[in-house]
Length: 425
Image 1 (cartoon, rainbow, N blue to C red):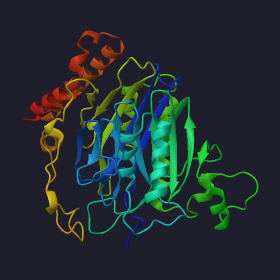
Image 2 (image 1 turned 60 degrees about the vertical axis):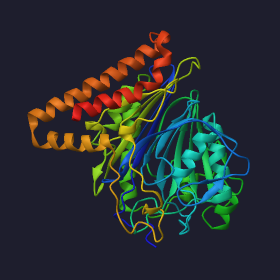
Image 3 (image 1 turned 180 degrees about the horizontal axis):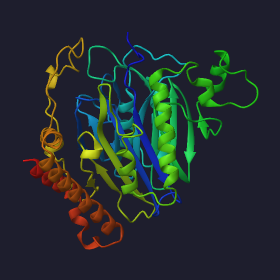
Image 4 (image 1 turned 90 degrees about the horizontal axis):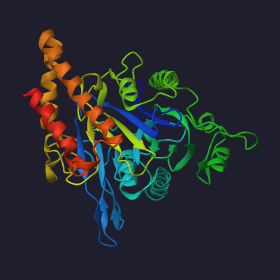
């Protein structure tokens, strides 16, 4: 089973800013999802729900036990799977995941994908710390595994996560069922496809150190550096590239310490020189997300999602949980039921067209940007203007200017999606 090769794309980048690193009293979360370049990501709204005791929940490959109540979520996900690459829930919890390879072998069996764990944590938690516990409990019970791309050649990995809420963030890094976590209560932090927790461990699997010692990875005495102990001794080329992106991300955050805003995070996600905005080797940034999580619980969280590839030529559109929120059909991919290649065994033997309406329009717009300079510049300016409207709406909302119109906020994302779709028509 081909679990990893030197040419396997393995890139994503997550960022968080916790005051005083933020310019405003809010936690700022951001992620670029870097995936196979033709993979489509949809943006899905999932309402809160109640469920029958003892019922089962079908995830991408396996079933898990359902809980009695689940929270409302907005998810950006590869449209072929159940989980998500990034998302937020109605309580202001945001999560992004990353692929990672460690000394602990990646299993061949199907279990929960990291993206499944992310969605399960969002629907079951009301804080970042609670989400961490949800993920680690599920890891212990079900494990992680299964192919993470829509291809007959399996692509498997373990996961790291960045979890944030209105007050703090957590980095969770895993190796099979084992894990270590670091709490971030101030400052800025990023993760990029590698273990990054060293000796500053805030929580860990109870058998983490004894297992490392039994494997001969740690002597059992002195300091315990999680990244040093569990990282591969010889880092593959692509992992070295991840190190460069990680350092570049650190530097970009450091340059903006104390003044980080949603716009700053969008600029970082659009940075091509560092490779954070990815377009290489059959891989690219297929969707992006930035969230503002105000520390004041009376203020709503604002989540910006692209639903399209390449953030440097996409529109970050604002989503707010509120009355009237509903699925925007233009960013929902078609479904194929029991005939879907992910549902038939052996899996992924055929391909289907999962492009949603906005994705198709955006593809045509990218073609114009590349082939007809004048029209392309006009389209890009329209994108910028639309995004700026969304940012100004968010600023006004956080300043209290939209207070009389809170009931209208649930339809904000859909309105911006419709306007972007009209731009491409």
